[in-house]
Length: 202
Image 1 (cartoon, helix red, strand yellow):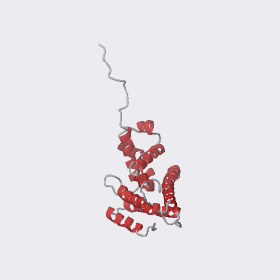
Image 2: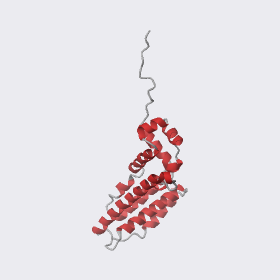
Image 3: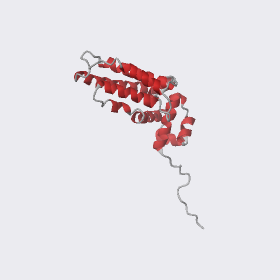
Image 4: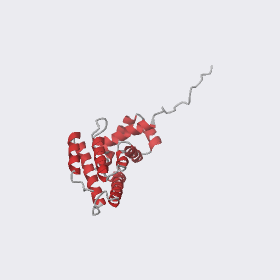
């Protein structure tokens, strides 16, 4: 008597790649690139290491995909902030988004783009370089927006857009580090408000 097969033997169990990537992002966010072991990642993703390699590539490639997800998701406030009509509005929205993202209870504290590879060894150099480029890209976008503000008369003509963008991004990354250290959302909001009190008048 023949037995009907419902499907091929040994077929890997399906999984939601989008959900798996979300979970990997959270592991990298919490532990950093080197601190996130393959066991941590595959356990959180609910898949085997074989399935992880097949779907996402090696650990570095998985991190790159996780950073892309972070950029479009938790860090997605930046492109929206750049659309604010004034430079002060841009700065306010960026710092508010930073405080909100780095202190959200459902997520790890701090910023994946800041803490992801601060202490990586030589083997993590490419990831360090990736995050340096990620931060520099954010800075460049803000600098360009502030240059437009100078050209439009929204910022004083003698304003240095690069210096102002560097000030804002440095302060924002400082907020992320403080958040990772357990500083409260309310205190970080007060810090952001204080940083904007001396904003250049239009």
